Length: 193
Figure 1: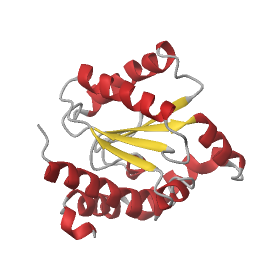
Figure 2: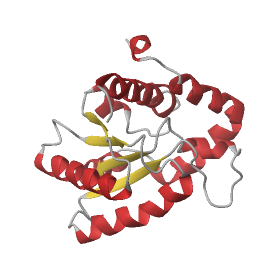
Figure 3: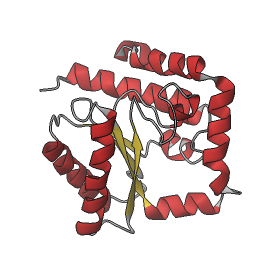
């Protein structure tokens, strides 16, 4: 069972990553507004199995469905005890897609994926571009389709975001990105205040 101190550490490390990587490097141009407004829910799952994680995912999708966007716009479902192997995590994303379809969530929500060992197809593990989706812990990011569509409509050439991010990662380099991620991974909750 995860203790409150463990949960605090996981959240502090994830917040560090959101602030120093996702927002500071502008990897997601739409992240700052809901984060600064306090509309991002950080939920640490105690799940150690795929089944338990799937249940937590469904519960969080229902929570989002039942909560107005001006209270919770998006959720980071952080699961430090489940699917730490990237290939297992990647395989689980098919189960996530099936839940969205079969559970009636498709068209209402999308799930973005982040993992400490994220690796795009056709890349080497050490390639800098993988850091666009590397996080301190495995994370399923639950996004409202309406919020995403609104954000995309206000951004010129959103289709170029992934390409821009890859170029930025290559410019900064693997060592720089690894150091940023390690800085967040080693953060103590007391240091985040």
